[in-house]
Length: 261
Image 1 (cartoon, rainbow, N blue to C red):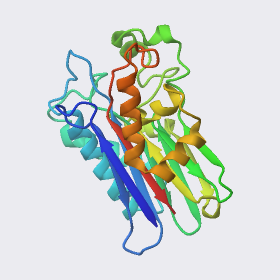
Image 2 (image 1 turned 135 degrees about the vertical axis):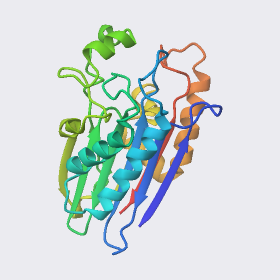
Image 3 (image 1 turned 45 degrees about the vertical axis):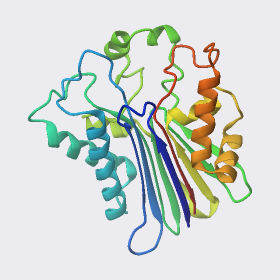
């Protein structure tokens, strides 16, 4: 099996809030991947003493351990356990009911000789290649389907949309949110390779329109994970008139995990 991982912070002066891991069980059968995109809070606090990187490291570490050590536990239940474990680690010191308590988007995958499981929560992406070369994106598109007016201010998002019915969901402090994730199980024989991308990289498709998901996957396979991150950075710097980026930050944390099964 071949795996490749690349991750860069949006600003070298700030910690990277993404997390990525690939797990290979000691049995040598199958594997897992986990990718998280920490949600950068606006000014005004989060009710938490800890940083977003602290949260993503805790949650990502728990997910990596649970998906490998408990192969018979469905990914949604593993996510619920990891959220509960992470919340317990700071429930006595922090206000976990705050709408901006540290949180993250999630992509998980786990494969064995028989099956391939996946989970996507919020706006990171999982791309799956079949043996005939077909690329299928697995996305949680609830955030992208919301009216632009609803996303005008952080206050509106927090009050009406974040982890609310009719809005969108992220992994924060409530384990039940795991039940909102997009999940599925595919026959292992239908999977040749996968790529997981945080939204700092999905810009290649969704903002800059360099190609579709199939083109993006082909770029990663041929040029490599770091090359895709580099291309996104070049596109960001070239968009001086903000034709594509609009109100979005110029650079975001960008992470790619690629695995040939």
